[in-house]
Length: 85
Image 1 (cartoon, rainbow, N blue to C red):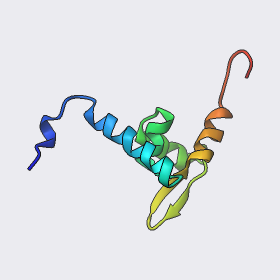
Image 2 (cartoon, helix red, strand yellow):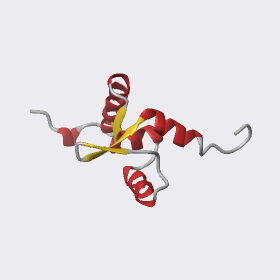
Image 3 (tube, helix red, strand yellow):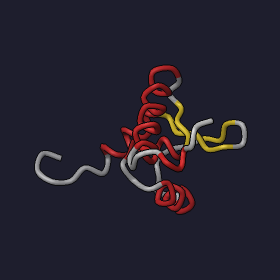
Image 4 (cartoon, helix red, strand yellow):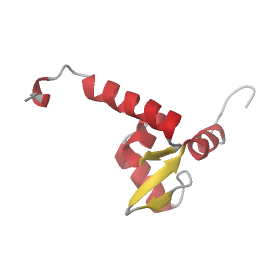
């Protein structure tokens, strides 16, 4: 049996990134945790944005919120700032 508490720091993030990559290639819908990682924000921040109606489009699938990668990318692109935006 593996002892996940002894994993190196960052191992969980790498696993989450890998899971998000696989999900993107096989299914465009990400969990809230995967979506937050994709955006580079905390899962709690994404949840707060959803509650405020300011987050990316999401939908309820089987009792949990799911985010389409295209919606995440569009939401992120709409928030660009700086030169050329």
